[in-house]
Amino acid sequence: MTHWPIIELVSENHPSRLDLLRFLEKVQVRDLQRTRDWITAEERLHAAEATRRPAPPPPEWLLEHGIGTGRPPVRVHTGECWDTRTRCKPTSADAARRALTEGVSACPHCRPDTALGILE
Image (tube, rainbow, N blue to C red):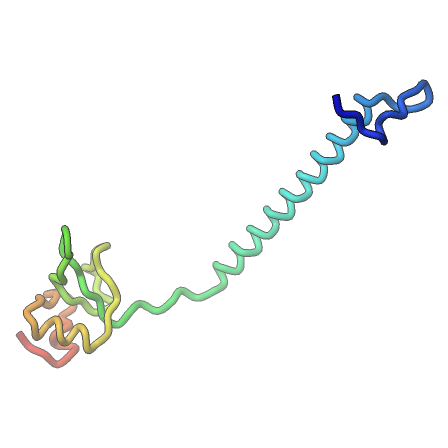
């Protein structure tokens, strides 16, 4: 059994070893709660800061990819199109033009071909 030198002073005038361990536990629980409170406060600051930042602007052009392996592009959209799906990725104007000239369909709602000066 390991003895702790500080705690070995057990006598009638001193707290028992068990009392000292319980006291240590209370101190550690209090310190842990204080740390958790600091973490909560920091998380609130980060959340408040995030709501103050403006949302990034939408991309100007989007390529919608198909389903499956390789996922080739299937449609080009403007960045503000309402008919985009989760398979859309931001792209440049040059890449959108190239996709349209290579046969990728233009969205019939936002008409990126017209916006880019390319007609089907």
